[in-house]
Image 1 (tube, rainbow, N blue to C red):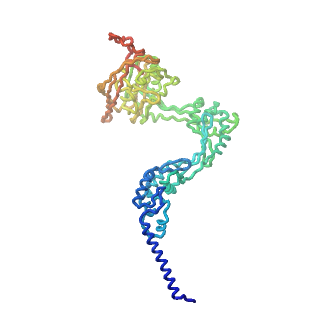
Image 2: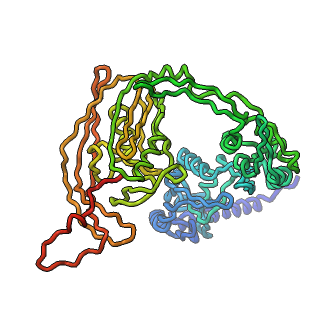
Image 3: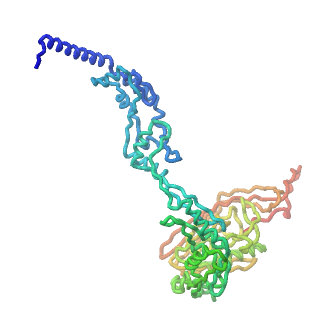
Length: 586
Protein backbone atom coordinates (compact mmCIF):
# COMPACT_ATOMS: atom_id res chain seq x y z
CA UNK A 1 0.00 0.00 0.00
CA UNK A 2 1.56 3.39 -1.01
CA UNK A 3 2.32 6.06 1.60
CA UNK A 4 1.88 9.84 1.16
CA UNK A 5 4.82 12.04 1.41
CA UNK A 6 4.91 13.62 4.81
CA UNK A 7 5.09 17.08 3.26
CA UNK A 8 2.11 16.50 1.06
CA UNK A 9 0.12 15.21 3.97
CA UNK A 10 1.00 18.25 5.97
CA UNK A 11 0.02 20.57 3.13
CA UNK A 12 -3.36 18.86 2.72
CA UNK A 13 -4.04 19.15 6.43
CA UNK A 14 -3.25 22.84 6.38
CA UNK A 15 -5.56 23.34 3.40
CA UNK A 16 -8.45 21.53 5.09
CA UNK A 17 -7.97 23.56 8.19
CA UNK A 18 -8.06 26.69 6.10
CA UNK A 19 -11.37 25.71 4.57
CA UNK A 20 -12.86 25.05 7.97
CA UNK A 21 -11.52 28.35 9.21
CA UNK A 22 -12.99 30.20 6.24
CA UNK A 23 -16.33 28.43 6.71
CA UNK A 24 -16.36 29.28 10.37
CA UNK A 25 -15.58 32.87 9.57
CA UNK A 26 -18.43 33.02 7.07
CA UNK A 27 -20.79 31.36 9.58
CA UNK A 28 -19.82 33.82 12.32
CA UNK A 29 -20.02 36.70 9.89
CA UNK A 30 -23.43 35.63 8.70
CA UNK A 31 -24.67 35.37 12.28
CA UNK A 32 -23.39 38.87 12.99
CA UNK A 33 -24.89 40.24 9.78
CA UNK A 34 -28.28 38.60 10.24
CA UNK A 35 -28.96 40.17 13.61
CA UNK A 36 -32.54 39.83 15.06
CA UNK A 37 -34.47 41.34 12.15
CA UNK A 38 -37.02 39.49 10.00
CA UNK A 39 -35.39 38.21 6.81
CA UNK A 40 -35.83 40.58 3.92
CA UNK A 41 -38.72 40.03 1.47
CA UNK A 42 -40.76 38.23 4.17
CA UNK A 43 -44.54 38.73 4.27
CA UNK A 44 -47.52 37.38 6.21
CA UNK A 45 -50.88 37.34 4.40
CA UNK A 46 -49.48 39.91 1.99
CA UNK A 47 -48.16 42.24 4.73
CA UNK A 48 -44.42 42.99 4.17
CA UNK A 49 -42.40 42.73 7.41
CA UNK A 50 -38.96 41.88 5.99
CA UNK A 51 -36.03 43.76 7.57
CA UNK A 52 -38.03 44.84 10.62
CA UNK A 53 -37.11 43.93 14.15
CA UNK A 54 -39.59 41.84 16.12
CA UNK A 55 -41.38 44.75 17.82
CA UNK A 56 -41.80 46.71 14.60
CA UNK A 57 -42.94 43.63 12.71
CA UNK A 58 -45.54 42.82 15.37
CA UNK A 59 -46.85 46.38 15.37
CA UNK A 60 -47.13 46.47 11.57
CA UNK A 61 -48.75 43.06 11.39
CA UNK A 62 -51.29 43.89 14.16
CA UNK A 63 -52.30 47.15 12.53
CA UNK A 64 -52.60 45.74 9.03
CA UNK A 65 -54.60 42.66 10.04
CA UNK A 66 -56.80 44.03 12.84
CA UNK A 67 -59.95 44.05 10.66
CA UNK A 68 -59.27 40.59 9.22
CA UNK A 69 -58.68 39.13 12.67
CA UNK A 70 -62.25 39.93 13.79
CA UNK A 71 -63.98 39.55 10.42
CA UNK A 72 -66.51 36.68 10.07
CA UNK A 73 -65.10 33.62 8.35
CA UNK A 74 -66.99 33.04 5.11
CA UNK A 75 -67.36 29.42 3.99
CA UNK A 76 -69.57 27.49 1.59
CA UNK A 77 -71.30 24.15 1.77
CA UNK A 78 -72.69 23.25 -1.62
CA UNK A 79 -74.33 26.34 -3.14
CA UNK A 80 -75.01 27.96 0.23
CA UNK A 81 -72.75 30.53 1.93
CA UNK A 82 -72.34 30.74 5.72
CA UNK A 83 -70.31 32.84 8.16
CA UNK A 84 -68.70 31.96 11.47
CA UNK A 85 -67.63 34.42 14.17
CA UNK A 86 -63.91 33.68 14.84
CA UNK A 87 -64.22 34.83 18.46
CA UNK A 88 -67.07 32.41 19.12
CA UNK A 89 -65.07 29.71 17.30
CA UNK A 90 -62.05 30.28 19.56
CA UNK A 91 -59.71 31.35 16.71
CA UNK A 92 -57.14 34.12 17.27
CA UNK A 93 -53.96 35.29 15.50
CA UNK A 94 -50.81 34.92 17.61
CA UNK A 95 -48.83 37.87 16.23
CA UNK A 96 -45.70 37.33 18.31
CA UNK A 97 -45.46 33.65 17.40
CA UNK A 98 -46.03 34.52 13.75
CA UNK A 99 -43.15 37.03 13.76
CA UNK A 100 -40.88 34.52 15.49
CA UNK A 101 -41.75 31.89 12.89
CA UNK A 102 -40.80 34.44 10.23
CA UNK A 103 -37.23 34.46 11.60
CA UNK A 104 -37.05 37.56 13.77
CA UNK A 105 -34.48 36.01 16.16
CA UNK A 106 -30.77 35.07 16.13
CA UNK A 107 -30.03 31.48 15.20
CA UNK A 108 -26.82 29.48 14.52
CA UNK A 109 -28.84 27.27 12.16
CA UNK A 110 -27.10 27.36 8.75
CA UNK A 111 -30.50 27.20 7.05
CA UNK A 112 -31.80 30.12 9.11
CA UNK A 113 -28.62 32.11 8.40
CA UNK A 114 -28.96 31.38 4.69
CA UNK A 115 -32.59 32.56 4.81
CA UNK A 116 -31.50 35.86 6.40
CA UNK A 117 -28.76 36.37 3.81
CA UNK A 118 -30.74 35.31 0.72
CA UNK A 119 -34.18 36.71 1.68
CA UNK A 120 -37.45 35.32 3.10
CA UNK A 121 -40.85 34.47 1.57
CA UNK A 122 -44.55 34.27 2.46
CA UNK A 123 -45.00 32.93 6.01
CA UNK A 124 -48.17 31.26 7.32
CA UNK A 125 -49.80 33.00 10.29
CA UNK A 126 -49.77 31.20 13.63
CA UNK A 127 -53.39 30.65 14.74
CA UNK A 128 -54.26 29.78 18.32
CA UNK A 129 -57.31 27.55 18.72
CA UNK A 130 -59.68 26.87 21.61
CA UNK A 131 -60.65 23.34 20.63
CA UNK A 132 -63.85 23.31 22.71
CA UNK A 133 -65.13 26.57 21.22
CA UNK A 134 -64.20 25.47 17.70
CA UNK A 135 -66.08 22.20 18.13
CA UNK A 136 -69.12 24.08 19.44
CA UNK A 137 -69.00 26.47 16.48
CA UNK A 138 -68.87 23.55 14.07
CA UNK A 139 -71.88 21.98 15.81
CA UNK A 140 -73.77 25.24 15.47
CA UNK A 141 -72.85 25.50 11.80
CA UNK A 142 -73.95 21.91 11.26
CA UNK A 143 -77.35 22.77 12.70
CA UNK A 144 -77.70 25.33 9.90
CA UNK A 145 -76.17 23.18 7.17
CA UNK A 146 -77.51 19.70 7.82
CA UNK A 147 -80.64 18.90 5.88
CA UNK A 148 -82.27 15.54 5.36
CA UNK A 149 -82.94 14.47 1.81
CA UNK A 150 -86.44 15.24 0.58
CA UNK A 151 -88.27 12.37 -1.01
CA UNK A 152 -90.52 12.97 -3.94
CA UNK A 153 -94.21 12.83 -2.97
CA UNK A 154 -97.66 13.59 -4.37
CA UNK A 155 -100.60 15.39 -2.79
CA UNK A 156 -103.67 17.01 -4.31
CA UNK A 157 -105.12 20.47 -4.79
CA UNK A 158 -108.67 19.54 -5.65
CA UNK A 159 -108.18 16.86 -8.29
CA UNK A 160 -104.87 18.32 -9.49
CA UNK A 161 -101.79 16.41 -8.33
CA UNK A 162 -99.12 18.46 -6.58
CA UNK A 163 -95.65 16.94 -6.69
CA UNK A 164 -92.92 17.44 -4.14
CA UNK A 165 -89.48 17.63 -5.77
CA UNK A 166 -86.92 15.05 -4.77
CA UNK A 167 -83.88 16.80 -3.26
CA UNK A 168 -80.55 15.48 -2.00
CA UNK A 169 -79.63 16.03 1.63
CA UNK A 170 -76.36 17.40 2.99
CA UNK A 171 -74.44 16.67 6.20
CA UNK A 172 -71.43 18.67 7.39
CA UNK A 173 -68.38 16.50 8.11
CA UNK A 174 -67.92 17.42 11.77
CA UNK A 175 -64.60 15.56 12.02
CA UNK A 176 -62.88 17.38 9.15
CA UNK A 177 -64.67 20.72 9.36
CA UNK A 178 -62.67 22.14 12.34
CA UNK A 179 -59.36 21.94 10.46
CA UNK A 180 -60.95 23.37 7.32
CA UNK A 181 -62.50 26.23 9.28
CA UNK A 182 -59.19 26.97 10.98
CA UNK A 183 -57.43 26.99 7.60
CA UNK A 184 -60.05 29.42 6.23
CA UNK A 185 -59.46 31.91 9.05
CA UNK A 186 -57.80 35.14 7.84
CA UNK A 187 -57.58 33.83 4.27
CA UNK A 188 -60.63 35.55 2.76
CA UNK A 189 -62.73 34.10 0.00
CA UNK A 190 -65.30 31.45 0.86
CA UNK A 191 -63.66 28.01 0.78
CA UNK A 192 -65.86 24.92 0.73
CA UNK A 193 -66.19 22.93 3.93
CA UNK A 194 -66.20 19.13 3.72
CA UNK A 195 -69.72 17.68 3.62
CA UNK A 196 -71.53 14.54 2.51
CA UNK A 197 -74.59 14.39 0.26
CA UNK A 198 -77.43 11.92 0.79
CA UNK A 199 -79.69 10.93 -2.05
CA UNK A 200 -83.48 10.69 -1.53
CA UNK A 201 -85.12 7.29 -1.56
CA UNK A 202 -87.86 8.49 -3.90
CA UNK A 203 -86.57 10.24 -7.00
CA UNK A 204 -88.14 11.97 -9.99
CA UNK A 205 -88.50 8.73 -11.96
CA UNK A 206 -90.60 7.14 -9.21
CA UNK A 207 -92.82 10.23 -9.00
CA UNK A 208 -93.48 10.02 -12.74
CA UNK A 209 -94.27 6.30 -12.50
CA UNK A 210 -96.81 6.91 -9.72
CA UNK A 211 -98.44 9.74 -11.68
CA UNK A 212 -98.88 7.51 -14.71
CA UNK A 213 -99.86 4.24 -13.03
CA UNK A 214 -101.97 5.46 -10.10
CA UNK A 215 -102.81 9.18 -10.03
CA UNK A 216 -104.13 9.59 -13.57
CA UNK A 217 -106.64 6.71 -13.32
CA UNK A 218 -107.49 7.65 -9.71
CA UNK A 219 -108.99 10.99 -10.74
CA UNK A 220 -110.40 9.89 -14.08
CA UNK A 221 -113.82 8.58 -12.98
CA UNK A 222 -116.19 8.80 -9.97
CA UNK A 223 -116.39 6.01 -7.41
CA UNK A 224 -119.65 4.42 -6.29
CA UNK A 225 -119.97 3.52 -2.61
CA UNK A 226 -122.67 1.04 -1.61
CA UNK A 227 -123.63 1.38 2.07
CA UNK A 228 -126.66 -0.23 3.74
CA UNK A 229 -128.31 -0.58 0.34
CA UNK A 230 -127.68 3.05 -0.56
CA UNK A 231 -125.61 3.80 -3.67
CA UNK A 232 -123.60 7.03 -3.41
CA UNK A 233 -121.67 8.35 -6.40
CA UNK A 234 -118.58 10.23 -5.26
CA UNK A 235 -116.56 12.46 -7.56
CA UNK A 236 -112.75 12.29 -7.24
CA UNK A 237 -112.62 15.84 -5.85
CA UNK A 238 -114.45 14.62 -2.74
CA UNK A 239 -111.77 12.18 -1.67
CA UNK A 240 -108.50 13.50 -3.20
CA UNK A 241 -107.91 16.05 -0.36
CA UNK A 242 -107.54 13.04 1.94
CA UNK A 243 -105.27 11.17 -0.49
CA UNK A 244 -101.47 11.34 -0.72
CA UNK A 245 -98.57 9.26 -1.99
CA UNK A 246 -95.46 8.99 0.16
CA UNK A 247 -92.30 6.93 -0.05
CA UNK A 248 -91.78 3.65 1.74
CA UNK A 249 -88.55 1.83 2.68
CA UNK A 250 -88.40 0.29 -0.79
CA UNK A 251 -88.26 3.72 -2.44
CA UNK A 252 -91.68 3.40 -4.06
CA UNK A 253 -94.54 5.84 -3.61
CA UNK A 254 -97.45 4.28 -1.76
CA UNK A 255 -100.97 5.81 -1.81
CA UNK A 256 -102.75 6.24 1.50
CA UNK A 257 -105.80 7.99 2.91
CA UNK A 258 -105.98 10.20 5.97
CA UNK A 259 -109.04 8.48 7.44
CA UNK A 260 -110.05 11.49 9.56
CA UNK A 261 -110.11 13.72 6.48
CA UNK A 262 -111.84 11.02 4.48
CA UNK A 263 -114.54 10.69 7.13
CA UNK A 264 -115.09 14.46 7.20
CA UNK A 265 -115.50 14.49 3.42
CA UNK A 266 -117.66 11.40 2.99
CA UNK A 267 -119.88 11.14 6.09
CA UNK A 268 -122.25 13.92 4.92
CA UNK A 269 -122.75 11.94 1.70
CA UNK A 270 -123.31 8.69 3.61
CA UNK A 271 -125.66 10.07 6.25
CA UNK A 272 -128.65 8.05 4.96
CA UNK A 273 -126.69 4.87 5.64
CA UNK A 274 -125.39 5.94 9.04
CA UNK A 275 -127.01 6.57 12.39
CA UNK A 276 -124.81 8.79 14.58
CA UNK A 277 -124.23 7.85 18.19
CA UNK A 278 -125.82 10.17 20.76
CA UNK A 279 -123.89 11.28 23.81
CA UNK A 280 -125.51 11.27 27.21
CA UNK A 281 -126.75 14.72 28.14
CA UNK A 282 -129.31 16.52 30.31
CA UNK A 283 -132.54 18.39 29.84
CA UNK A 284 -134.37 20.57 32.32
CA UNK A 285 -137.80 19.36 33.41
CA UNK A 286 -139.87 20.96 36.17
CA UNK A 287 -136.89 23.03 37.28
CA UNK A 288 -134.54 20.06 37.60
CA UNK A 289 -131.96 18.43 35.32
CA UNK A 290 -132.93 15.02 33.94
CA UNK A 291 -130.35 12.62 32.54
CA UNK A 292 -130.88 11.72 28.87
CA UNK A 293 -129.26 8.35 28.21
CA UNK A 294 -126.57 7.84 25.59
CA UNK A 295 -127.35 5.80 22.51
CA UNK A 296 -125.10 3.76 20.25
CA UNK A 297 -125.27 4.21 16.49
CA UNK A 298 -123.80 2.79 13.34
CA UNK A 299 -121.30 4.24 10.92
CA UNK A 300 -119.18 3.32 7.92
CA UNK A 301 -115.87 1.72 8.82
CA UNK A 302 -113.63 4.41 7.31
CA UNK A 303 -110.42 2.42 7.70
CA UNK A 304 -111.86 -0.47 5.70
CA UNK A 305 -113.43 1.90 3.17
CA UNK A 306 -110.08 3.61 2.62
CA UNK A 307 -108.42 0.27 1.85
CA UNK A 308 -111.20 -0.69 -0.56
CA UNK A 309 -110.98 2.67 -2.35
CA UNK A 310 -107.23 2.24 -2.86
CA UNK A 311 -107.92 -1.12 -4.53
CA UNK A 312 -110.34 0.30 -7.13
CA UNK A 313 -108.79 3.69 -7.88
CA UNK A 314 -106.31 2.29 -10.44
CA UNK A 315 -109.26 0.78 -12.36
CA UNK A 316 -110.05 2.54 -15.62
CA UNK A 317 -113.84 2.32 -15.93
CA UNK A 318 -116.68 3.50 -13.70
CA UNK A 319 -118.16 -0.03 -13.64
CA UNK A 320 -114.99 -1.29 -11.97
CA UNK A 321 -114.88 1.54 -9.44
CA UNK A 322 -117.53 0.26 -7.00
CA UNK A 323 -116.92 -0.52 -3.31
CA UNK A 324 -119.25 -1.89 -0.67
CA UNK A 325 -118.81 -0.16 2.68
CA UNK A 326 -119.01 -2.15 5.87
CA UNK A 327 -120.77 -0.71 8.92
CA UNK A 328 -119.54 -0.74 12.50
CA UNK A 329 -121.09 0.24 15.80
CA UNK A 330 -120.59 3.89 16.72
CA UNK A 331 -120.06 4.45 20.42
CA UNK A 332 -121.01 7.69 22.20
CA UNK A 333 -118.20 9.87 23.52
CA UNK A 334 -120.00 10.28 26.86
CA UNK A 335 -121.80 7.23 28.20
CA UNK A 336 -124.82 7.26 30.49
CA UNK A 337 -122.76 5.97 33.39
CA UNK A 338 -120.12 8.65 32.88
CA UNK A 339 -122.72 11.41 32.73
CA UNK A 340 -124.39 10.18 35.90
CA UNK A 341 -121.11 10.65 37.78
CA UNK A 342 -120.83 14.33 36.75
CA UNK A 343 -123.09 15.52 39.55
CA UNK A 344 -125.33 17.74 37.43
CA UNK A 345 -128.21 18.03 39.88
CA UNK A 346 -128.96 21.66 40.84
CA UNK A 347 -128.79 25.24 39.70
CA UNK A 348 -125.51 26.91 40.67
CA UNK A 349 -125.97 30.28 38.93
CA UNK A 350 -128.41 32.32 36.86
CA UNK A 351 -128.18 35.69 35.16
CA UNK A 352 -130.62 37.69 33.05
CA UNK A 353 -130.05 40.70 30.79
CA UNK A 354 -132.68 42.79 29.03
CA UNK A 355 -132.55 44.49 25.67
CA UNK A 356 -134.71 46.85 23.60
CA UNK A 357 -136.47 45.31 20.64
CA UNK A 358 -134.80 45.24 17.25
CA UNK A 359 -135.44 42.59 14.64
CA UNK A 360 -131.74 41.84 14.20
CA UNK A 361 -131.33 41.43 17.99
CA UNK A 362 -134.15 38.94 18.17
CA UNK A 363 -132.59 36.92 15.35
CA UNK A 364 -128.97 37.05 16.44
CA UNK A 365 -129.46 36.71 20.20
CA UNK A 366 -131.91 33.88 19.64
CA UNK A 367 -129.60 32.03 17.24
CA UNK A 368 -126.53 32.29 19.48
CA UNK A 369 -128.55 31.26 22.54
CA UNK A 370 -129.92 28.28 20.62
CA UNK A 371 -126.40 27.08 19.74
CA UNK A 372 -125.15 27.43 23.34
CA UNK A 373 -128.20 25.83 24.96
CA UNK A 374 -127.43 22.30 26.15
CA UNK A 375 -123.66 22.72 26.29
CA UNK A 376 -122.14 20.28 28.78
CA UNK A 377 -118.69 21.04 30.18
CA UNK A 378 -116.90 18.13 31.77
CA UNK A 379 -114.31 18.84 34.50
CA UNK A 380 -111.35 20.69 32.98
CA UNK A 381 -113.14 21.43 29.70
CA UNK A 382 -113.00 24.92 28.18
CA UNK A 383 -115.99 26.89 26.92
CA UNK A 384 -115.40 28.99 23.77
CA UNK A 385 -118.31 31.06 22.50
CA UNK A 386 -116.76 31.43 19.04
CA UNK A 387 -116.17 27.70 18.78
CA UNK A 388 -119.73 26.82 19.80
CA UNK A 389 -121.58 29.60 17.98
CA UNK A 390 -119.33 29.66 14.94
CA UNK A 391 -118.88 32.43 12.41
CA UNK A 392 -121.76 34.87 12.25
CA UNK A 393 -122.93 34.40 8.66
CA UNK A 394 -126.24 34.33 6.83
CA UNK A 395 -125.80 30.59 6.29
CA UNK A 396 -125.34 30.13 10.04
CA UNK A 397 -128.60 31.95 10.74
CA UNK A 398 -127.39 35.46 11.61
CA UNK A 399 -128.55 38.87 10.40
CA UNK A 400 -126.86 42.24 9.91
CA UNK A 401 -127.03 44.42 13.02
CA UNK A 402 -125.27 47.15 14.97
CA UNK A 403 -121.79 46.50 16.32
CA UNK A 404 -119.00 48.66 17.75
CA UNK A 405 -115.94 49.18 15.58
CA UNK A 406 -113.22 51.67 16.44
CA UNK A 407 -115.34 53.27 19.13
CA UNK A 408 -118.27 53.87 16.75
CA UNK A 409 -121.46 52.07 15.85
CA UNK A 410 -121.37 50.20 12.55
CA UNK A 411 -123.43 47.62 10.69
CA UNK A 412 -122.22 44.03 10.42
CA UNK A 413 -123.43 40.45 10.60
CA UNK A 414 -123.95 39.21 14.15
CA UNK A 415 -124.74 42.48 15.90
CA UNK A 416 -126.29 41.66 19.26
CA UNK A 417 -124.29 38.51 20.04
CA UNK A 418 -122.41 40.41 22.75
CA UNK A 419 -125.70 40.39 24.72
CA UNK A 420 -125.29 36.59 24.81
CA UNK A 421 -121.60 36.90 25.71
CA UNK A 422 -122.36 39.27 28.60
CA UNK A 423 -125.17 37.10 29.98
CA UNK A 424 -123.07 33.94 29.74
CA UNK A 425 -120.07 35.69 31.32
CA UNK A 426 -122.14 36.70 34.34
CA UNK A 427 -123.57 33.19 34.75
CA UNK A 428 -119.99 31.88 34.67
CA UNK A 429 -118.90 34.63 37.08
CA UNK A 430 -121.46 33.65 39.73
CA UNK A 431 -120.87 29.92 39.20
CA UNK A 432 -117.28 30.61 40.28
CA UNK A 433 -115.70 29.16 37.14
CA UNK A 434 -112.24 30.16 35.89
CA UNK A 435 -112.17 33.15 33.54
CA UNK A 436 -109.79 32.60 30.59
CA UNK A 437 -110.64 35.34 28.09
CA UNK A 438 -113.19 38.13 28.09
CA UNK A 439 -113.11 41.72 26.91
CA UNK A 440 -115.54 44.44 27.96
CA UNK A 441 -116.94 46.80 25.34
CA UNK A 442 -114.70 49.72 24.45
CA UNK A 443 -117.25 52.14 25.93
CA UNK A 444 -119.94 51.61 28.52
CA UNK A 445 -123.41 50.43 27.44
CA UNK A 446 -125.91 51.23 30.13
CA UNK A 447 -127.96 48.02 30.03
CA UNK A 448 -124.95 45.93 31.12
CA UNK A 449 -123.46 45.74 34.65
CA UNK A 450 -120.37 47.94 34.95
CA UNK A 451 -117.17 45.92 34.72
CA UNK A 452 -119.07 42.64 34.29
CA UNK A 453 -119.75 42.38 30.59
CA UNK A 454 -118.12 40.99 27.48
CA UNK A 455 -118.04 41.60 23.76
CA UNK A 456 -117.05 39.13 21.05
CA UNK A 457 -116.01 39.27 17.39
CA UNK A 458 -115.20 36.49 14.95
CA UNK A 459 -112.62 35.01 14.92
CA UNK A 460 -110.20 36.66 17.37
CA UNK A 461 -112.24 38.19 20.18
CA UNK A 462 -113.76 35.38 22.23
CA UNK A 463 -115.38 34.54 25.54
CA UNK A 464 -113.58 31.62 27.14
CA UNK A 465 -113.74 30.02 30.58
CA UNK A 466 -112.84 26.66 32.08
CA UNK A 467 -114.85 24.32 34.25
CA UNK A 468 -112.23 24.10 36.98
CA UNK A 469 -114.46 22.05 39.28
CA UNK A 470 -114.71 18.29 39.77
CA UNK A 471 -118.33 18.30 38.56
CA UNK A 472 -119.98 18.69 35.18
CA UNK A 473 -121.56 22.03 34.24
CA UNK A 474 -124.70 22.03 32.07
CA UNK A 475 -125.61 25.35 30.41
CA UNK A 476 -129.22 26.31 29.73
CA UNK A 477 -130.33 29.41 27.80
CA UNK A 478 -133.83 30.91 27.92
CA UNK A 479 -134.60 33.56 25.31
CA UNK A 480 -137.67 35.80 25.55
CA UNK A 481 -137.60 37.39 22.07
CA UNK A 482 -137.40 41.15 22.13
CA UNK A 483 -137.13 41.33 25.91
CA UNK A 484 -134.52 39.28 27.74
CA UNK A 485 -131.99 36.46 27.81
CA UNK A 486 -131.33 34.18 30.79
CA UNK A 487 -128.40 31.81 31.19
CA UNK A 488 -128.47 29.16 33.91
CA UNK A 489 -125.72 26.78 34.94
CA UNK A 490 -126.45 23.44 36.56
CA UNK A 491 -123.95 21.39 38.55
CA UNK A 492 -123.29 20.62 42.24
CA UNK A 493 -123.30 23.70 44.44
CA UNK A 494 -119.98 23.88 46.31
CA UNK A 495 -118.85 27.47 45.79
CA UNK A 496 -120.43 30.64 47.18
CA UNK A 497 -119.81 33.71 45.05
CA UNK A 498 -120.40 37.39 45.79
CA UNK A 499 -119.47 40.52 43.87
CA UNK A 500 -118.60 44.07 44.86
CA UNK A 501 -117.87 47.13 42.74
CA UNK A 502 -115.81 50.27 43.22
CA UNK A 503 -117.05 53.76 42.45
CA UNK A 504 -116.30 55.05 38.98
CA UNK A 505 -112.99 56.91 38.74
CA UNK A 506 -110.66 58.51 36.18
CA UNK A 507 -113.54 60.15 34.34
CA UNK A 508 -112.85 61.18 30.74
CA UNK A 509 -115.11 63.46 28.70
CA UNK A 510 -116.38 62.86 25.17
CA UNK A 511 -116.23 64.98 22.02
CA UNK A 512 -118.81 65.94 19.41
CA UNK A 513 -118.30 64.75 15.84
CA UNK A 514 -120.20 65.69 12.68
CA UNK A 515 -120.06 63.05 9.94
CA UNK A 516 -121.94 63.36 6.66
CA UNK A 517 -120.38 60.26 5.06
CA UNK A 518 -122.42 57.29 3.85
CA UNK A 519 -122.89 54.60 6.47
CA UNK A 520 -122.67 56.97 9.42
CA UNK A 521 -124.58 55.76 12.50
CA UNK A 522 -125.56 58.46 15.01
CA UNK A 523 -124.75 57.89 18.65
CA UNK A 524 -125.00 59.72 21.91
CA UNK A 525 -121.90 60.69 23.82
CA UNK A 526 -120.76 58.64 26.80
CA UNK A 527 -118.05 59.60 29.27
CA UNK A 528 -115.19 57.23 29.88
CA UNK A 529 -114.24 55.94 33.31
CA UNK A 530 -112.47 53.15 35.20
CA UNK A 531 -114.15 50.68 37.53
CA UNK A 532 -113.06 47.62 39.52
CA UNK A 533 -115.19 44.56 40.24
CA UNK A 534 -114.14 42.07 42.91
CA UNK A 535 -115.35 38.46 42.89
CA UNK A 536 -115.19 36.65 46.26
CA UNK A 537 -115.31 32.85 46.08
CA UNK A 538 -115.73 30.72 49.21
CA UNK A 539 -115.12 26.98 48.91
CA UNK A 540 -114.64 24.46 51.73
CA UNK A 541 -114.16 27.25 54.25
CA UNK A 542 -111.46 29.00 52.21
CA UNK A 543 -111.99 32.37 50.55
CA UNK A 544 -110.21 33.91 47.59
CA UNK A 545 -110.73 37.22 45.80
CA UNK A 546 -110.30 38.19 42.16
CA UNK A 547 -110.35 41.76 40.86
CA UNK A 548 -111.49 42.61 37.32
CA UNK A 549 -110.30 46.06 36.23
CA UNK A 550 -112.17 47.72 33.35
CA UNK A 551 -111.26 50.92 31.53
CA UNK A 552 -114.06 52.37 29.44
CA UNK A 553 -113.15 54.83 26.72
CA UNK A 554 -115.37 57.85 26.09
CA UNK A 555 -117.72 57.48 23.10
CA UNK A 556 -118.03 60.54 20.93
CA UNK A 557 -121.40 62.15 20.32
CA UNK A 558 -121.88 61.70 16.58
CA UNK A 559 -124.23 63.67 14.30
CA UNK A 560 -124.68 62.25 10.81
CA UNK A 561 -124.74 65.61 9.03
CA UNK A 562 -122.32 68.37 8.06
CA UNK A 563 -120.94 70.52 10.81
CA UNK A 564 -123.10 73.64 11.15
CA UNK A 565 -121.61 77.02 10.38
CA UNK A 566 -120.68 79.08 13.43
CA UNK A 567 -123.62 81.21 14.51
CA UNK A 568 -123.23 84.85 15.44
CA UNK A 569 -124.69 85.85 18.73
CA UNK A 570 -126.65 82.61 19.17
CA UNK A 571 -125.99 80.00 21.82
CA UNK A 572 -128.76 77.64 20.74
CA UNK A 573 -128.03 73.95 21.22
CA UNK A 574 -129.23 71.14 18.87
CA UNK A 575 -132.83 70.21 19.48
CA UNK A 576 -133.67 67.02 21.32
CA UNK A 577 -135.00 65.55 18.08
CA UNK A 578 -131.61 66.00 16.37
CA UNK A 579 -129.57 64.53 19.21
CA UNK A 580 -128.76 60.81 18.84
CA UNK A 581 -129.92 58.43 21.51
CA UNK A 582 -127.62 57.22 24.28
CA UNK A 583 -125.36 54.27 23.51
CA UNK A 584 -127.42 51.13 23.18
CA UNK A 585 -126.07 48.38 21.00
CA UNK A 586 -125.17 44.70 20.74
